[in-house]
Length: 105
Image: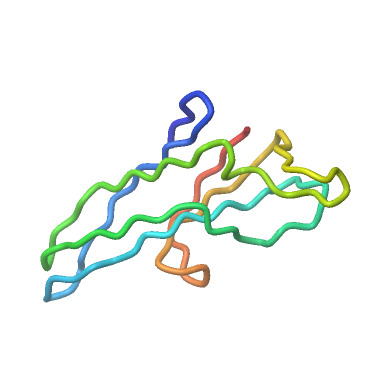
């Protein structure tokens, strides 16, 4: 994972371990570890669909712009980006996350 200016780039490998060609939608979720307001445990902020032959792998990159780390605050009547710790989670669904990475924004 790289932070490039006002975006985070998450790069990971997806492997088809099956016997047939198929597709996977790799989903990237953001969790604000230190939010001052209540936020969901996981917020879907990016995804990439990949097609793979049986037994093959590919590298996937998902760019998360600064807006992916913001939330709408009713208290402040606007979008807020709080600095601090975030956890990025990658999986095939919100209930099946297989990779995690930490990021300080």
